[in-house]
Amino acid sequence: MNRTLLYPLLLACGLSLSACDTASANGPEFTLEVEYTAIGRPQIVVTSLNDQVTIQKVLINGGKSKCRVMLRSDLMGSVGGTHFPLKLNYTERWRLVMTEPCRLREATLFTNLGNASYTIE
Image (tube, rainbow, N blue to C red; front, side, top):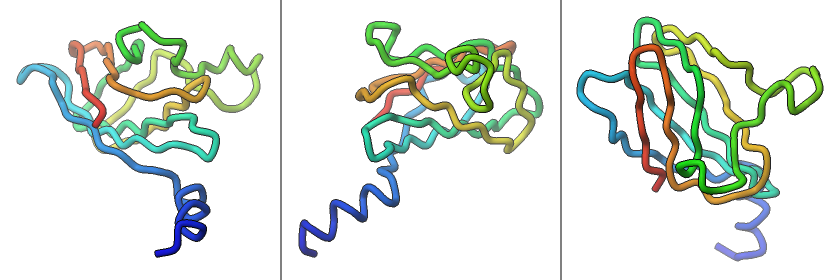
């Protein structure tokens, strides 16, 4: 396929990556899908595999980068962003948008059922 056609296709569809679970056997379970916007801003689509779970906080790249989850307060009360604690039931999904373009390497979800860490491939 011609590269000039491939680039707009990637921008339109978003780049989707997967994440590997490194959580303990007794901790909460999620599936994560990572997409990048046209400007390189990552978005993580989190799907709960738990009956009920409350995500209290999400730590990106071990807190060692400027990249973090965009909160509703970052948008000065506008619609959008994430408000913690975030309650999810089985198979419910939520899109976590990052504050700026960055490369995701890991994500840790702190929940009422324990922590779940994921390595982004």
